[in-house]
Amino acid sequence: MKAKKPDNGQNQDQMIPKPKESSKEPEVQETAKQPGQVFEVSDQEEIEYLEQEQGERKLSCRDESETTAEITAADQNLIKKLETELDNKEKELTQFKTMAEEYKDRYLRALAELDNFKKRAEKEKEEFYQYALSDLLKEILSVIDNFERALKTPPENTEDKTLREGVELIYRMLMNLISRYGVTPIELKDNKFDPAIHHALAVEESEEVHDPKIKEELQKGYFIHNRLLRPTMVKVIIPKKN
Image 1 (cartoon, rainbow, N blue to C red):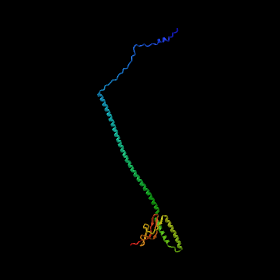
Image 2 (tube, rainbow, N blue to C red; image 1 turned 180 degrees about the vertical axis):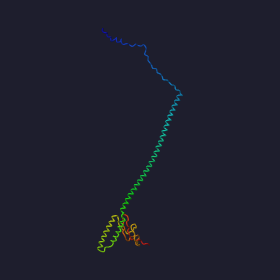
Image 3 (cartoon, rainbow, N blue to C red; image 1 turned 60 degrees about the horizontal axis):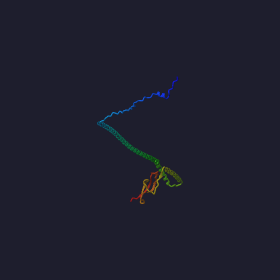
Image 4 (spheres, one colour; image 1 turned 90 degrees about the vertical axis):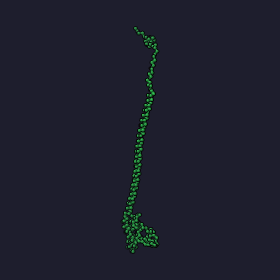
């Protein structure tokens, strides 16, 4: 036997159970608000609370002021210390500057003295080379004087003339020799007597002169460079007394 297929229209509705309709209305569950417990504060307690808060503020302000005062005092001490150190450094700097100026002055003085010493040494060295042979040249001048006396005598014959030529040759050689060492004869100028370079061996009085005059040159004088090597020996005429 074949099973009968259920009817799609009626049978499905019959198979699904339908909820029972409640006759009562749905209750709306309201959550009742639970109010917090309320504390009542009295005036006295409020005053005490305010006083306590004010006291704490005062303590906080005092602590802050004390801390600020401590910081300020520490800063002042530090500033004083730094100022003292700065003053000391400035004093040291001033001392160093003074010492530097003194050392600079000493250095310049020493440098100037050294330069003067070098110049003086060079001058002395030059003078030494110039005048080292002064004594020897004076001895040569004595020989030249004898040659000059010999040349003042005129030759009498041919032999004397030949001898004179030889003497003149030696005389010129000696004069050239001493001239190479800076020796030059003193020239008479207007026969004026100069005691610095003339030595009076004889003196005569005369009414014809008003100042001392050189009458005769007895021995020739010489310079060596700019220094007197030997004065000129002269005969002098001076004004007559009264």
